[in-house]
Length: 380
Image (cartoon, rainbow, N blue to C red; front, top):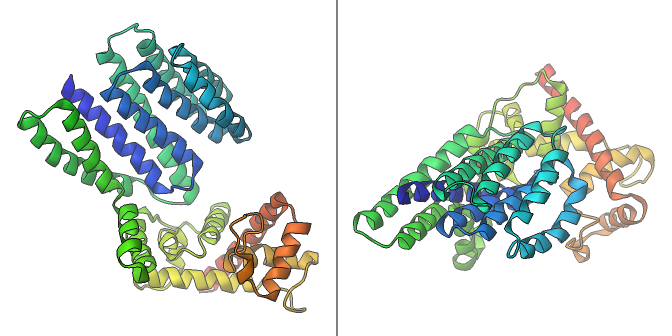
């Protein structure tokens, strides 16, 4: 029983951290990762309230995938359900059931796994079956769910997933076995075995974020360059082949590459890197960045340096947002560092362009950039 618990706890812990490390800025990965980490803790301390954590987190992830407009309401209601679970543990299954039903049309496979998890969690909370059966069943459902989330995110990013996930799993598993087995073989307490395995996995999965923190403290002058090199190395297994015959997919990949315009480490993973000349990864990413800039500049009208007429909207939507890095709807925009043209553009965005309108312009402009890149491929 202990060996199985240690295995499923470590597996859930690894997958939860892997999802969080993919992109800490994505709420979907946070929800799914938190659920897996909560389950890992519940294996060590099998309490109904801890089992409620993955149920509540899974609810948030399913809502983000199927009904994202409801996630704000769920963020408000989550603490209420979590507090109520101390007295009525099964109450956490209610929002999970509702979100699973809502996802049937848009994400049927997530609904199926949601039903499986709900049945296993209900059996555990209501003590219908022994913990030795229900806990591993919950773990299986959560791992399937976590893998589906990782694949969904990879598809959205235009990345391959198998090699990157397998590499992370092998390294984390080897390290966990290496250190955890020593505690088990020498008769250490079970809690020490759990924490040793968790620490070994965390050090491996979070190696890059930890290295970035150390670099900012120890070598701040080169911390950014070192982070870029590490991210580029991590991105190489995520790159997949480019299919230029699919115009819709090519446009989607172009839109994603534009969103990573200022991040060479991210651009290394873009399939569009195949459009560049053979060179070291960061050099090819720089070439792709230059190609995107050239295509953006072709959208610029010939009359002046800045305008607000309809013919300027696509150029403005890409150039000022991605190339110049102006975020008109963010309080973190450094307004004091902008030149006169940037300030005019920022003022125009804030006062004249709704955020949703800017998003639509960027999508349309990205299709024009994609068409320009494809024309370059055809003439090459």
